Image (cartoon, rainbow, N blue to C red; front, top):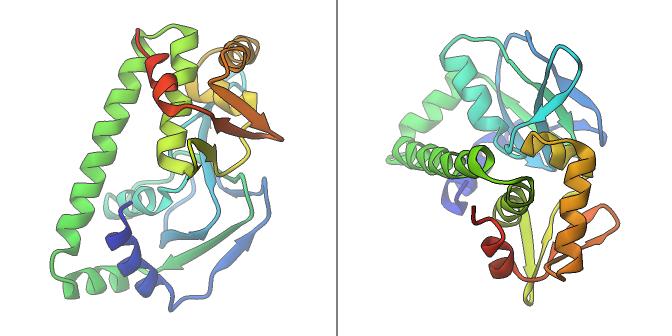
Length: 215
């Protein structure tokens, strides 16, 4: 979400009292009827689904709960995902009618939201291509590039992903086994392209990491 849209939404949602969640707290689950529009004030939420055998598949949407809840509410559909806080989270909730009224009073905001959604869609198509066509190695590299671009903080030449990311979560993002994911991470570390500080990934050279996504 670009800063211009975020500033406007911050003003609107700031009139409501935020709901606080602890790290690793389940916020929502499949089948829940969406009653209000959700918007993250701070923190990150993991959206995921599970297979019949309990295997998790994580979506690469760690702070886009606003768009998901908006889509569900407009289409009158139930939530299809588990939502888990992966950091402490503060979450706003607002009535649909009040948000629509606010958008109608803000010239151009709906168009800006549409552009942002389409841009996200385009990026997801690119990521999907790498995840379908790539090797296990290029898939892990691609996911790390995406996380760094969307949720990273740059300091000097290095980019640190803003939240702790386990090998299990990376595996569920790429659709490959955790053990295989760990081997690819080790290869990237051995090349000096990435490192870890605790459970946070640090990209030492984002351009070199992008090269490793090539299939």
